[in-house]
Length: 222
Image (cartoon, rainbow, N blue to C red; front, top):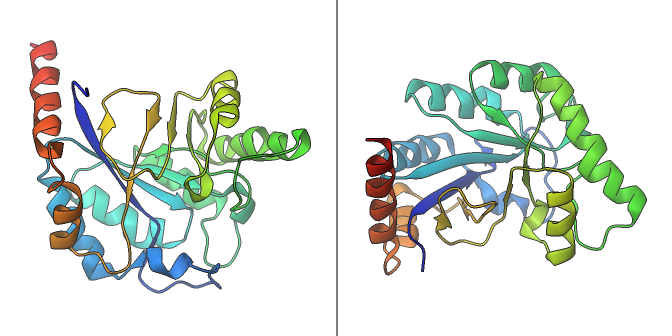
C-alpha cells in the first residue's frame, strides 16, 4: 500500500522537431498549445513532478520558458551524445537550464536500452555520459531516466552502486513520494489536458493517494 503518492509527468518533444526522428518517436511530440494547456492543468494537481527526456532543443526554446512563467521546476534528462547536434540541446543550453534552477539528469549517451550492456557500453552510458552532462550543467548529476523505459534488476543494482539518488522509468503509475525508483506517465502526441487528467487521475485510488501524500507531507512540516 502506498502511503503517499506523486504523479510524474514526462514530456519529450514540443512543437516541430528540427531533426530526423527515430521510429515511433513522433508519437511522443506534442504541439506547443497542447503543452501549455497540459502545464496549466497539472499545475493545479496536488503532487506532481515534471520531467523532459532526450534533450531536444524545444526543451530550452519552449519547455523552459513556460515552466518558469508558471513558477514550476522540472528535471531535464538530455542524451549526452546529442549535445550540440542539430535539433538538440547544446552544452550552453544545458547550463542555461541549470541556471534557471532546474535539475539536470542523465538519459545516457545515445538513445538505447540500458539492459544487457557489456562493461564498455555500461561505462559510456552510465559514467561518461553522466560526467559530460555534469560538466555542461556545472553541477553533479544524480538523477537518471531509463531510455525507452526498459530496465531490470541487474541495471537497477548497477545504478545504485553508481550512487544515483533517483531513477525514473516509464511505468505509467503513481510514484511513492521519496522512493528511489520513480515511475512516470509519458505525454503522448494525442494528449490534451482532458485526456491526461482522465488517463492519470481517473485511475481508481490515484487522486486519493496523491492528496493523502500531500496531507502527510504538510503534517511533517508543521
